[in-house]
Amino acid sequence: MAAETTPVPEKPAVKRATISDKKIWIPLATVIVAVICLVIVIPVVIVEKNKHHHPAIQIAISGSETPNDHWTPDRPDPYICEYLGENSCWQPKYATPGSPPYTHDGNWPARSKTCVVPSGNSSSVDDGPAILKAFDDCKVDGHIIFQNTTYHINTVMNTTGLKHVDVEVKGRLVWGTDIDYWLNHSLPIGFQNQSSAWIFGGDDVHFYGHGDGTLDGNGDTWYAYDGGRSNLHGRPHAITIMDTTHSVIEGLRFVQSQMWTMTVARSEKVLLQDIYINNTSSGGQKRHLNTDGCDTLYADDLSFLRWTVDNGDDAIALKQNSTNIYIANSTFYHGPGLAFGSIGQYPGQIEIIANVTVEDIICQDTMYCARLKTWTGQVIGYPPNGGGGGVGYTKNVTMRNFELRNSSVGFGIAQCTNYLRSRPKDDSICDTSFYQVSDIRFINATGTITSPNVATLQCSANAPCSGIDFSNNNVSPVGAAAQSATGYLCSNVKDPIGFQCTDKCKGHCAHI
Ligand SMILES: *[C@@H]1O[C@H](CO)[C@@H](O)[C@H](O)[C@H]1NC(C)=O
Ligand SMILES: *[C@@H]1O[C@H](CO)[C@@H](O)[C@H](O)[C@H]1NC(C)=O
Ligand SMILES: *[C@@H]1O[C@H](CO)[C@@H](O)[C@H](O)[C@H]1NC(C)=O
Ligand SMILES: *[C@@H]1O[C@H](CO)[C@@H](O)[C@H](O)[C@H]1NC(C)=O
Ligand SMILES: *[C@@H]1O[C@H](CO)[C@@H](O)[C@H](O)[C@H]1NC(C)=O
Ligand SMILES: *[C@@H]1O[C@H](CO)[C@@H](O)[C@H](O)[C@H]1NC(C)=O
Ligand SMILES: *[C@@H]1O[C@H](CO)[C@@H](O)[C@H](O)[C@H]1NC(C)=O
Ligand SMILES: *[C@@H]1O[C@H](CO)[C@@H](O)[C@H](O)[C@H]1NC(C)=O
Ligand SMILES: *[C@@H]1O[C@H](CO)[C@@H](O)[C@H](O)[C@H]1NC(C)=O
Ligand SMILES: *[C@@H]1O[C@H](CO)[C@@H](O)[C@H](O)[C@H]1NC(C)=O
Ligand SMILES: *[C@@H]1O[C@H](CO)[C@@H](O)[C@H](O)[C@H]1NC(C)=O
Ligand SMILES: CC(=O)N[C@H]1CO[C@H](CO)[C@@H](O)[C@@H]1O
Image (cartoon, rainbow, N blue to C red; front, top):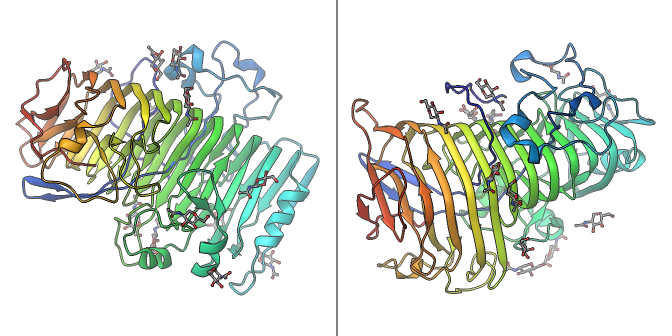
């Protein structure tokens, strides 16, 4: 499903993505108690064309099956380049008619082979081997089609190394719930001891779900099994987009992901658009930890457009070495919103997040709309749930035109992350990080918040934040539209731009 249209003024220029994290918060009357969070995730991808050169790309025209409400407008992508600026505009290396970027199935490029994936149509038949065979048969210049039926997947899948491949998902892929199997076999992704049920990737890949094709992680079983533990080893991410370049992933639905929904790792120039994620459990519980929408790692030049994420953790989280990211026109429900980090978990490791623009975002009933979180400078325990002592920087992040709807806080920074320790009475550990945060803009936000604070900014004394710009925000307390919320709690924020710190954190900034 497409995100709701955001009622914001047109704007001229350029932006990039943002990072988000996860967390949970509870609005209580006018007070908010920030509780706990976790993080991780990632997705992404994007493709662009250079505005000065796009004639080389032929755009497919919408086919009759194209749901109009999901696919407006279409390529050629008039504005991604404008938003990103010329430097970011990507010209496909293999710019032949019909190659990405395109956005639907109007005119599929001619491929040397088509592989229709057979389904056993029964939960007692594992369709995993048939899927792997189709990907193997069609891995170069192929067209892989999941029919409009249900596929049951009981085995891990590694379908990387695709080259010039189109993948259509018309039906539903449902993952099995043999917890013992997945805990033992889910595929490592090379980060934080995490793993995935499916690793997918290649160059010039178009993965298209018609706005209807669904990946169902059968997560109820995992939510019950996990019992609120963070980063349980072997609990699989639904899909990891790995080693992927010049590709488009679009029109897919994800429900009840086992853990993080999508991770985009070691990839560049990927467009991820019209993605719907709903990890509400059958019992109606929305706030399952670690059901992130997307996490990015070692990713450059990704675009996320029109995401809808309803979950209990980060909607989109930009993690280590995520650069040149653009996120727009998306709606996040119930979780902690967009995340930058958590980052700085590995002692001495340099990790950066830079050049991110996020705009036209709606946050509905979220804890934060966006937040940045780093681990402490002091090392406590080991990854995945302990760590700290990482260095590097997050800089040049622009977030604008966010609409808050009954969210707790607009934006937060905290440099206190650690999932092993309980929160101490004082915030002194939050002052130990040397991870540098600068040039963060959160501007032109509107809407309502349930706490008195537009932002809580807990920067580390060892690396005070600079260039923090919160200009032109016009946010009201819920139920008091005529008033302005003016609270900004700050620790170690140098020379605030466009706002005044109303108080120090003094224990009231969330340790997101
Ligand atoms: C975002 O939504 C606005 C309003 O619907 C629209 O004008 C704009 O083209 C959209 N931008 C993107 C990148 O989808
Ligand atoms: C499964 O369903 C699809 C779509 O209805 C059908 O084409 C296929 O023949 C069925 N497979 C089996 C093994 O019955
Ligand atoms: C799959 O079948 C359902 C039910 O017939 C239909 O509503 C849907 O549009 C179909 N999806 C695709 C991609 O053909
Ligand atoms: C998973 O690993 C455990 C511990 O090594 C073992 O007892 C169990 O049999 C394994 N299960 C499967 C399905 O491989
Ligand atoms: C997936 O397959 C690729 C190509 O064979 C291989 O290089 C990679 O190590 C595999 N990944 C995992 C996690 O098994
Ligand atoms: C990391 O994964 C290994 C198996 O590959 C497991 O034995 C180990 O316990 C995990 N470490 C943590 C800290 O979870
Ligand atoms: C997510 O699913 C739940 C349960 O079906 C539903 O109530 C909710 O509206 C869905 N959220 C979105 C954003 O579609
Ligand atoms: C992240 O990128 C920076 C800058 O390119 C580099 O110095 C650093 O080694 C990278 N970090 C990792 C963990 O690869
Ligand atoms: C950020 O963007 C600037 C301007 O385009 C560019 O010079 C710089 O290399 C980018 N930084 C990273 C880390 O990609
Ligand atoms: C900041 O990032 C934006 C893209 O998000 C880029 O256009 C701009 O050039 C960058 N600025 C600097 C100073 O790197
Ligand atoms: C902020 O909103 C005003 C109109 O409310 C608009 O003129 C201005 O361009 C916006 N600024 C940015 C940076 O989007
Ligand atoms: C949007 C969507 O598919 N939501 C699903 C979330 O999970 C519950 C429980 O399985 C389903 O009932 C919803 O349809």
